[in-house]
Image (cartoon, rainbow, N blue to C red):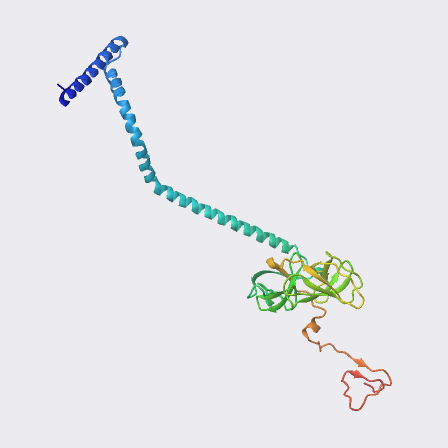
Length: 318
């Protein structure tokens, strides 16, 4: 006859109880031999029985507990990351601001060290705007007539000639850059001491024309103002290519401007110079200067000729 499931259960129960009893007998025997208490033996036995079960529960529960802790800390971590990112942005902005201030100090120190020739007085100004288009060779500065600036004055930076003033208001002025076709200047090539004229072409190098040149010029020769329209000795630039002088021909070549016109920030306006050709270039003749024309003796004047009042004719008594 086959054993029923109930019989199998009874046998398992009897076996389990027997094992427990056997464990207590062995524990009692250990107590007698070691002198340990029953409580300690019970505690150690219980721990031995349930320790594997506890490890299994910990193995299953630990990831769950970690996940719950991670979810609870996620919001806090996100807030902390946002705070740290904001601080990083602030520090980056401070670095940029510090760099800009350092560059401004460098530019101010550079322009402060610029001296005009002949100890002429100058006005330091900041370029605050360019022309209405990228192709307009004009710059606006924050100084004007109230600071002694007038049309025609030379504008320089630490590298050389920038241009000239061509429009003035009370507190502002406009600079026309030397590369503009409306700007020209009398110059001298230092290596030959011969003179010529440079003029702008809208962009790139300046055009140099020397009408009475007898000596060749070489690449790299320094070109400075000759003192006609602008004060003498202002650096204009350097010759780009060699050119030879030929009798009856104009020596033509190019000059690379010394000033970095695309990065002009601070400039000096030379206010203590009157151009030698100012009257001619503006089409004005100074009538306040008295002149007297004296005709040679024996000169006859036709009756229909009108003689200016300041003309002296010998023998007429005035």
